[in-house]
Image 1 (cartoon, helix red, strand yellow):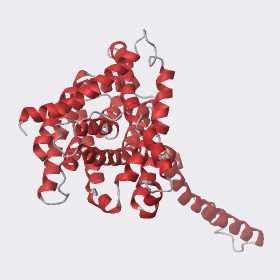
Image 2 (cartoon, one colour):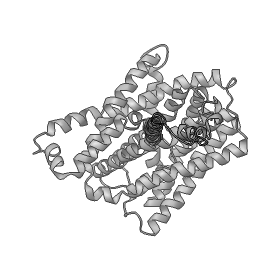
Image 3 (tube, one colour):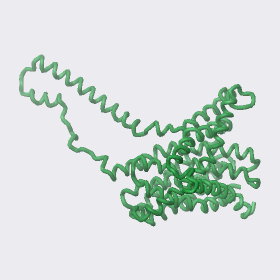
Image 4 (cartoon, helix red, strand yellow):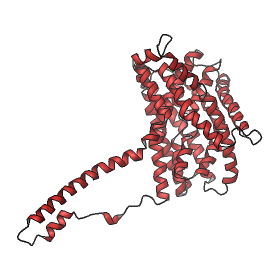
Length: 414
């Protein structure tokens, strides 16, 4: 395919997204007041998060993923991890160059590390596949495979965001608010047994009462040592925040993978002859509402962020150089390094020959920051206004950069 044909193919899905996003912005205007209030957006967001997205990814993975196909896409978790690690390294370099304030460091690292690997592919891939001029083969096959790849990408990225990025932002937020102070006064305690032995070392005899006290103290010391082992494990589980890590989209992905990978389960739920096919059909019906609702929310949220941009940019500590640095990292440096990694993997035969799979692997390096970063900054109350500014600026830039990079990626894999 020539360049202009590829450019048109890449432009159409972006235009579709922009049109629906524009409708979301339109519905968020004061004149219509459908998505203007934060309560309305929160209710719709809750439906997307708890109902539509889990239903979508579960139904898609159950129908498309098998054990053999899961083995073929083993490189995707590693590729997504590369985007997080390289993004963090480039973000750290950006911090050193721009000399960012301490309270901005966690936000910048998070925005550079985590791309919108869930929502954006779920929106873009169907638009690419449903276009009549798609270079990825038959529309139904392209859509089926593409949505499976995008759903898997969402599940994996969600785990990385709530483990890797969550703790980066938490650590820098704690530093900023002096939460993680270490009390040096508790270092080097002398045990009760040692102290008692020192007190009675000059005594020739130890009475039975003293012996009982020593035994009791020894037992309590043993219990305290057990607590020293158990307490860090409890702290680790608490810090991992399994309730957040096992979010509804992730649980939907796990359930879909189990149904798809285990043949008896797939025969029970998937197919015209499946006894419980009504369950999968209902999940698919609910999932169809996910992408339109998600895109409308993006438009409504961007309108809110636009107001925050005007009111908050002057009073925020986000320098223009930092904003430019995030844009350069996400839309220039990361995609270039992504091309090197993916093409190297293709050259050495590490990944199987599937142009659509290669395209999605490359696309994972060229996406705007993850929406989950806004949630994380709200959890710690650090950089909320600045995060809104970053989200607005990067999503506006994405409408241009995604078209150009998608065109180049299609040319590269075909």
